[in-house]
Picture (cartoon, rainbow, N blue to C red):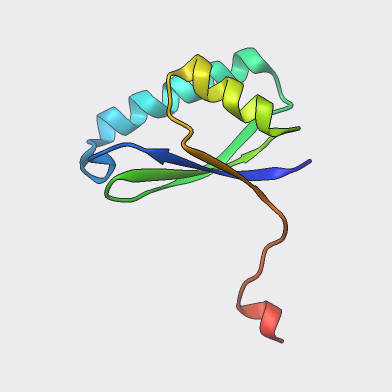
Length: 90
């Protein structure tokens, strides 16, 4: 199943409290439960003004539907083609 990186522009994201991040996470999980197991949230990275999320989904449309139903921005959705890490150099 394809993986995607979703770039969400959220000004001040890095200053969100743990309670606010928990509420966002709960909303996301609620929408995912409604959509079924074909789309999964892997994890996210919170930076100063953006949140980068990794999702497993059948297609970009499913990622967009999750964002719309959850009320989250999805400013850029990019399919992950491959992964590299330090072991790639060996």
